[in-house]
Length: 264
Image (cartoon, rainbow, N blue to C red; front, top):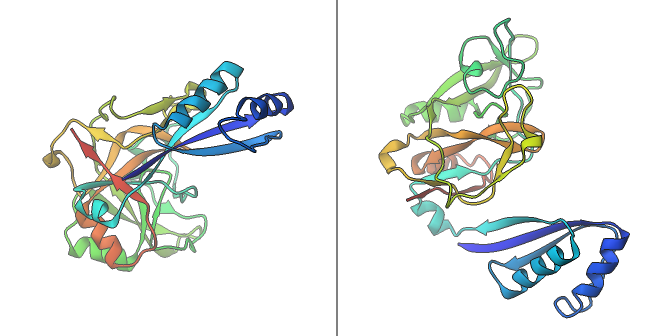
């Protein structure tokens, strides 16, 4: 695993001038202007510690995140993998009822009746993550999941906005994992980002997910107990087995970002 730390700052004119002067020795030739900047460091390097000290001394707010990269060998040796959510989650709608909650962040409603439909039927790749904590598959991939006896997910057909059947299915994970082990899992809590109706989504995942559980506690398809903020959406993370990962590779569904799940 290659691990780097990303420091992101948003600077006004005064902050930009102060930071340019303060980092002259650390980042020779660096010149900041008002705007948003991201600086990448090797994880836990002395330069990273120095920059964070400078930002704190100047009172400049910053955001810290990890950038992780894994070799193919590391990914294929991991028994469980987290699907890294893309920026564009697919929205799958369910025909509303009077019993529906005011938001769609609960895990249950999409599985409890009501026809599912897409606002548009052309969604691109064969495998796309949805805002409901599920995945959108085409008929070929759905058939492969059935043939390979993939466990932990329920396949439901999807209509288009006219009510006609689309060529897609939603794979809805039925197995919800226990809470992540925190620490060593790191999350960033932001109560202002939580849904005002259900209170979920007020945090984001900032590290590999760690679980104090054995492999038998997982199914082929799983969702996390936690609901995380993904841009404008709130959704659980999806955790898949090595069997599912290799099936997706076999069917060439496009580049799917994954990273290992750590069992402690």
